Image (cartoon, rainbow, N blue to C red):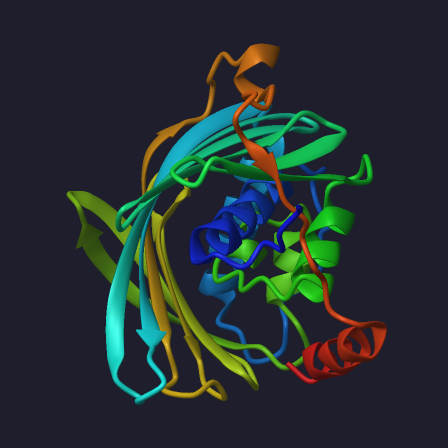
Amino acid sequence: MRQHITSPIAAVIATTLLFAVACTGSEPPREAAATGVDPKADRLLHATSDLLGSSKSFTFTATEVRDRIRRSGQKEQVQLTKTVSLRRPDRMHLKIVGPNRTGAAFYDGRTVSLVEEEKKMYAQANVPATIDEPLDLLAVRFDVPMPMADLMYSNMYELVMTPHTRGQYIGEVSINGTTCHHLSSQQTLLDWQVWIAAGDRPLPCQLETLYKNDDGQPVTRITFSDWNMDAQLDDTTFAFTPPADYERIRIVGRSKSEEKTEESSNDAK
């Protein structure tokens, strides 16, 4: 008997898969700075987008600390560690470790496989050959929260710089020994901050998001480390063969009417 994918770790695996696969798209078109965004912040975001877009393969680690709002309204923090390997144009592997749980995700250019190791379960779905469409599909249809998706999207700059975006350059700070530029931005439903490494490799050091309209206004902070922008990755890294004792489960999406409501909400950001 097949089950629906409802466990928290499976949702987190799907989320990070979206971030990682989105990194493999082509370079976005150059656009002018959005109104209300500091020119220095605009240049830094362009540079980060260009660097990610020009790299053929890379790996990194993301340590995520996010707020979980309980039914009582009490806020608690959950920490996850994700190790990501990517190869253009359509290969990805993710390992994720959370509280008492371990999972993985694979993308081989045709099929997405999400694996929950402790429960010996996995889910699979065929996805389009392009990169942005799977990101949109899983975000809207499967309601997966994506606190760092815009940074990893193939057209990251275009997504970040909406007509409603306001942004400031705050200054330089040190994060784990690296000097970083601190940028802050405000949108209708979301406030976010990003820290970008100073120098000739403007990679993300840290990202923080705050969802203003959600109950409890949860905050997610993601710290990036161990970037390797010239990783040598072969096909076996991205291949998944289900073990005989693993059960395949089904991902349940939202209805079309709910998707339309979500799209209308996003247009207002």
